[in-house]
Amino acid sequence: MLATIFASLATAPSVPWTRRLLLPFRAPSPHTERVLELAEPRCLGSFLGNSGTVAPLPGGQFCVSDTSGGRVLLLGADGAVLATSPLLFEAPAVLALSRGRDAVYVADAGDHAVHRLALPSLQLIGSITGGGGGSLGLSYPSGLAVSAATGRVYISDKGNHRVICFEEALDDVVFEFGVPGRAGSVDGMLNLPSGVCILEPERRATRGASSRAAPHRAAPGVEEEEEEEVIVVADTGNHRLILFGATSGIFLRALGGAAAAPPPGMSAAEFAEWSSSSSGAFLTL
Image 1 (tube, rainbow, N blue to C red):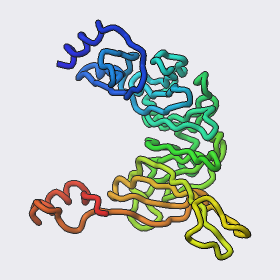
Image 2 (cartoon, rainbow, N blue to C red):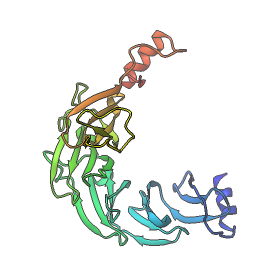
Image 3 (cartoon, one colour):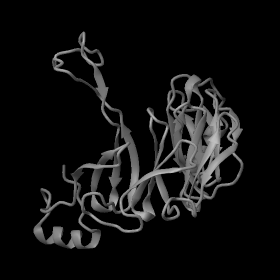
Image 4 (cartoon, rainbow, N blue to C red):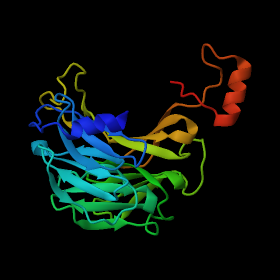
């Protein structure tokens, strides 16, 4: 069915991209995807393999990771390929833009590495390999986030049950959250962490400021101090979200966890059997 759809699309005329949504279609084999423009389904972009992440840039350009093709592409607003990274990667997937939008980070879980590519050339300018991830080498890095305040890079090092904070150039480890190489469920430990993101801080008034003061605007004679950014990581093996300080690396709180009782519609016996086979299951908030 998909092959038929692809054949009909391949003969359709190209039209300019206006308001668009990237919509991948995957064929059973060889896992070919095409990027379609949703407002005009006949418009066909470039061939991709199993694509991972799209990172938008100013001016309508965007980077996309071509996971099965082992590369990262820079595409223009019209879908034209503007640059291609060197074919150095095994399975590039997750992307994150640098604070200044002059580089893109790519997590290559297949090669246990994170790379930094210059924009717009996509030339390699920095890497962390399997042997350079702090106290342990990287193992299946599966999440990336970049601080808008400091430019630091946070890597979810899934196989080592930790999140590592690196300086912007990937040349220095700032801290590690979690116990490297050990999975756990107590505060400060992770079990197969995956996605990671950053919550931007809120400003708070000091010296007796009124709570009714306008946001981001201090009253006369009152200073404002900015709170620390907060890192949120999906603690996959523990079915929860973990929050910790982006600068301090201090554990703040956990959200969710494995359910202690069956959800509506599931019997106690079914829940017990399902929980024993899936390490505890439902995320409860």
